Image 1 (tube, rainbow, N blue to C red):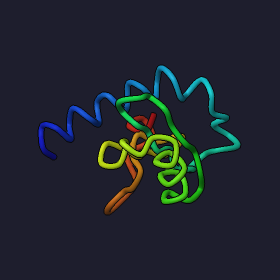
Image 2: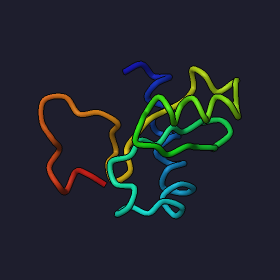
Image 3: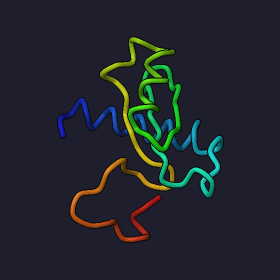
Image 4: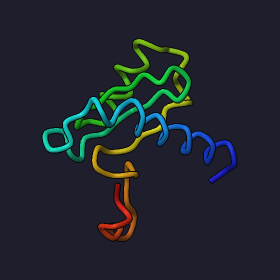
Length: 90
C-alpha cells in the first residue's frame, strides 16, 4: 500500500468511526459495503459495492478516485486467504 493509500485508509477509518458508525444499524446492515468519500465525508451503504459507489459519485462526481470501501462490521471491504480473528475485527 502506498503512503497515499495508507493515509486515505486512515482517514476513511476515522470518518467511519466518527460519522458513519453512529448512523448504521450494524445488525441490519452487517456485511454491506460502505463507500466513503474521504474529502466530503459523505458515504453510501449498499449490499452491492458498485451501486454504493455509483450513488456516491452521482452526488459527488469529483469523488471518483478517492473513495474508500469497507464493510459494516469489518475494517475491510474484502478478505484474501482467511478471516481475521474476532478480536481483530471492529
